[in-house]
Length: 142
Image (cartoon, rainbow, N blue to C red):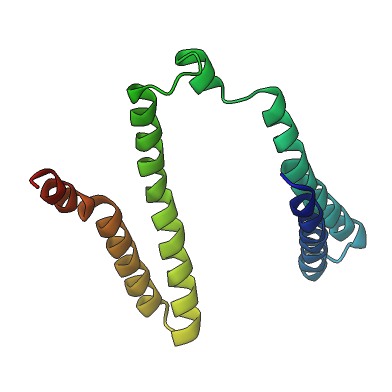
């Protein structure tokens, strides 16, 4: 990460801690629990945002370096493509869940939100998994 990105993440960690403090304060009557929730949330965010990049510098890309001796092989591209393609499924689920919540809140009907979220998931998975097949076949036939 760059220095600018490092500095930009600090206010987000503090805001996350404050948000957890305020949320816990509304749930629990004990101020110590709220302070602990905020401190743990901010500390965890800082540890993940600043600590993980440091660990990655110590242990770089083990699969690529160990299995393929650092070479860019056809098999490595196949594995990488499979991982990226598989990652779109949870991304689609997350986006569909977001659509469900937003449309449900706007419309006041969670049934409408559920239908819209389901349609968003079908559309996204169709575009990511079904649409490329005819495009690939058409490109190969040229």
